[in-house]
Image 1 (cartoon, helix red, strand yellow):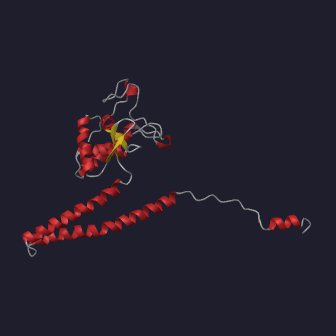
Image 2: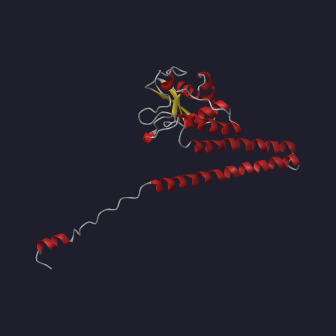
Length: 228
């Protein structure tokens, strides 16, 4: 898949595709590291081409897994943004597409719970956000989908006959989905434990405190200055 390069207005001296003022860089982070590229949190300088390359490569992997092209690119663009939140116009500028293409993509991503929508009162527009624990939430939401598949498979087994080859095949699929439903709570618990252990290990060890004088001995020493 060829990567769509984003023009550099500071270099080209032109406005962005959706009205980005001339001389500004849409990849430059806002104060606090909120922008999609440029200077991120902690003053990290990013190569816009490298970030765009990641977006296209990860989007390509999601496309291969069955997601449509534009929702894949929008989702990956939000993942690569420090704030994790962009408006439709910002997404259109970032990905060099029309606002209409963004509209359809975010509608799909909202339906499958990969992103959320919120109102930005300062700019009086909707923004779209991807959460840090998006994969965890996505797995949780799949429990209801598995339950629906389970019920449908039970109806299918009754329709084709449990003692037939087709019924045996459907029963194997049903058992697998039931196994997944039973394992998901355990996986969620193990993930929470893993994350707590990981975050705890990342915390710096408390600084060693200097030795404190023996407070109980001080009054005795003051009362008996000549004591050996």
